[in-house]
Image (cartoon, rainbow, N blue to C red; front, side, top):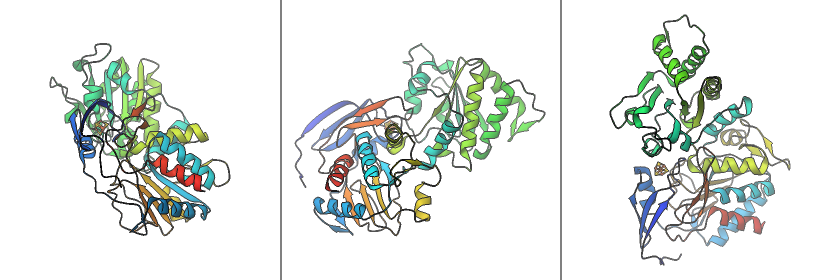
Length: 425
Ligand code: SF4
């Protein structure tokens, strides 16, 4: 391992942060002998992840340190002897995912992302009835009514600063011109108070009842009379006022985070958001916005879709891509023993729980990955956007951001390791 750094001190501006789906691209990072410091624009999550000092480690076979070459050979053998591997986690950038697609094609693997359950909630809606979505820039520049449905955006720490309370709106939309509404349970609504003190509207209900509230709003905007006093604990008068605001908005947005809608048949709630949006576009401009895409989820989904024609949870075992949103989930194929080896990839986040199954397992993970078992092969990999350049797709899927390298790393990228595996096969 090369312990020497070629960099002694450097400041890099406009650094994109790969640690959540909104990909802020304005960080200023100082590098002193490969110790990073976030100088400007880092949220606590970015500061922790850019500045963490990682232990040195080496590739391992069954927990024992080995040269990288041996670990790659061993990974290669496992995949060669496997009838149907599962390649999951998929926490990588666009080039990492492109190489995963090639490997899946060669090995007849099943693909799923670590946030597959969240991704699929949206995919089912998109497939079934379609949707009308917007972008971060459109919200920043135009949205005067923002309905946060089941999320307070806590997992996306600079969402309000970058998108909502942003004075640089292209059409001079003032903070006071925006109305924020929260629907859901135990949401932290502090960030929805505008810088001048204007408070958001809060409709408290259980997460499971958000669909009821939204479908009632859909009925009200379409002119129906609801002969009830309240819906899911919210007074009908409150819903009528909100329905009028939705019709009067110049540009309304319903924001949800599919990962936080962890309820049975969450896709039906999301479908309600999307159908309400579609109806409202008869009167005004309205759109949906999905907050997600952490751990390279949008990159994995995008690359899979443009290369195979299908979203994730696709199986290459038959020699062609076979998509099934439920059958090919990580949980399901491991439980039903439909796969006989696992390649798990997580290059952004070492806290993600790697599934422990009784099949040969290869882990491509950050050097501080904590495992409660000894996989057949562990290979430390570098992090896109810190240790190497790359591209990653933002939560709204319209922007693919170029990532920067801000320090030297002794580890190879996911793309490089998988390319070596493919070449040796
Ligand atoms: S909000 Fe997300 S993208 Fe922005 S700095 Fe924080 S972790 Fe990074």
